[in-house]
View 1 (cartoon, one colour):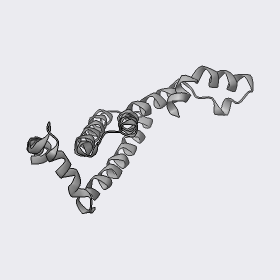
View 2 (view 1 turned 180 degrees about the horizontal axis):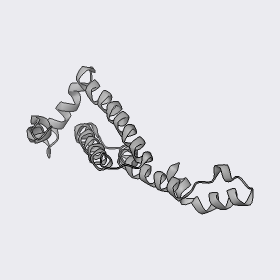
View 3 (view 1 turned 120 degrees about the vertical axis):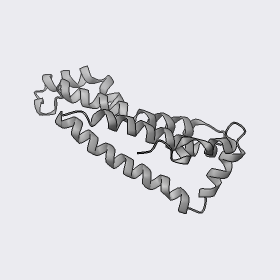
Amino acid sequence: MLNRARKLQPVFDQYCRTHSYTQFELDQEDWRQVEYLLLLTKPFFDFTNVLSKTRDVTVHHVFSIYNRLFNHLDDAESKLKRKAVPWKKRMLQALGAAKRKLSKYYTAIDTASYGKIYAIATILYPSKKLRYFDSTDWRGEGID
C-alpha cells in the first residue's frame, strides 16, 4: 500500500492542493520516511511474495530466510544508531520492536511440534545438508 502511495505521490499532492486538504498533504520529509520504510520492509515483502507464489516445497528455506531477515534488520539498525534526526530515532525503536517480534516467531520453532521438521528438511536438502549448520551463524562466532 505504501508502494502504491509513493507511486501516486503527485496525484495525492495535487488532490490535497486542489481541495485545500493541506492537513493531509505530505511534505518531502514525510515522503522520505515512506521511502525509508519501504526499504526496510522490502525483504519481508519479497520473501512473502516468492513463498506465496511457489508451488514447490519451501520448508528447507526457513532458517536461511530468518537469517537474512535478521541480518537485514541488524544492518539497518547499525546505520540508524548513528542518526540524530527524530524520525530516524523513532524508526530505530520500531526496528527493535520488529526484531523482538521476529525473534518471538523464530524461537517458537524450538518449542513447536513441527520445529524439528525445519531442521530435518534443511539437512535433507541437497545443497544445504549439515554444512548449513556449520556456519558462523549457528556456531555463534562473531556475535557480540
